[in-house]
Amino acid sequence: MKKINRILKGRKYLCFLDFEGTQFSHEMIAYGAYFTTLNKEGQIVKAKNPIRSYVKCKNSIGKFVRELTGITEKDLEKYGVDFATAIHQIKKYCGLNFKKTMFVTFGNHDIRILNQSCSYNLNAPQELCDIIKKNHFDFQSVISEFVKDDNGNPLSLTHYLETFGIEFDGTAHDPMYDATNLAKLYSVFLKEKDIVLNQYCKVLARSNVGPEPVNKAVKKLLNGESVSPDEFKQFITEYID
Image 1 (spheres, helix red, strand yellow):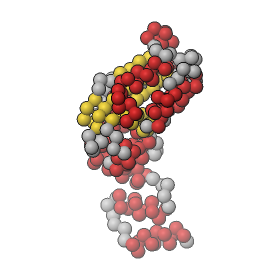
Image 2: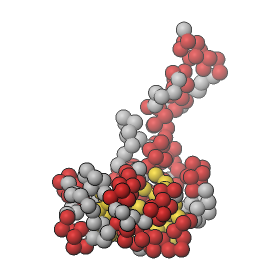
Image 3: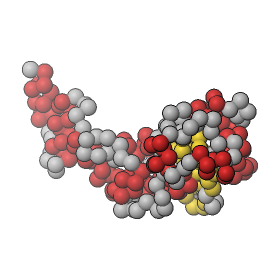
Image 4: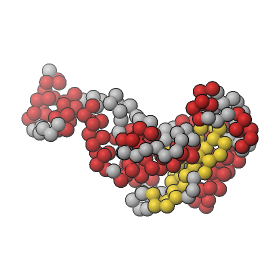
């Protein structure tokens, strides 16, 4: 897809990331990472085993997040690493290609978690965090242009997968599974062009963001009807008058 190619700019490596954060301070409490290698078409052809880790935070997790993720303060105390260590783990996982890697998330909240965690940790490896932010790719912003719900809203990761006939593998809100399933969604989005086409036609048919004459013409075309130049001019005339 041209849009994906323009974003990747020939990148050979993608690291799919998911960060879980506290409810109020939005500090990182866990991460999942999945490093992949692409071919010239941008398709995933090789992947490392995914990794995950708990990350210690300065503030409380919050009841909603505890219930959503199953992560508790006791988990962080027993198994967690500090934020600086977590970022260095991600760098080590990506290896020598860290600076050449595009970091893919589902939405932009992960970058907010990264920023908030930096602000709460004086020893944060700011240079490494800046590399991740500079090479960040929000995949949700792309797929949500072509696939939306009936009200024109983006779907969840699970529901996007269902649109392509794929079940979520593993436990939702486990950052490692969120990262690997995001990679699955990326792959199927590139492969299943007919599904993307059909979904985008639905988006255009429901859309009313363009000028009224254009919307009327698009809806007729998507219904299999033709629109002549004179008819299109008539749509414009009716709109003006």
